[in-house]
Length: 120
Image (cartoon, rainbow, N blue to C red; front, side):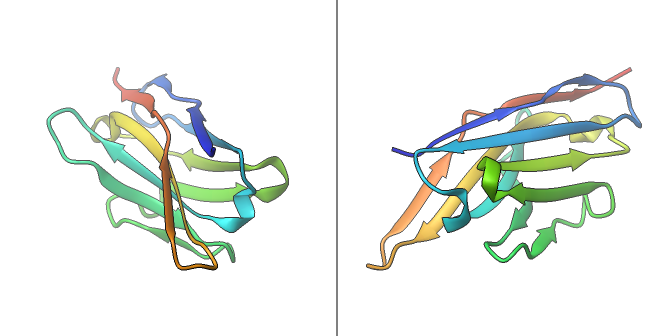
């Protein structure tokens, strides 16, 4: 069974930085497309960034230039480096792993999230 555990969240002042980690166990990270999502209070969960198996990255417009997603398959870990944080970045950040098996079955796993609070 695949398990995902996020860490690295916390309280940071506006303009500060955080690095979130997403540790995957139970399967090889290299098999998955990896995502970071976030959900702010009272809002829907939204995608923040994605990294493909081939290390191609995409970002949502509201974070582009301030956030970088990366993966270390040897450590089975995905990272989200967040810089110049703003109060509107306050949310629970979730990691997601997706893949299509050789038999065409979609596998989709989520972590429990890590809280990021940006406040002075």
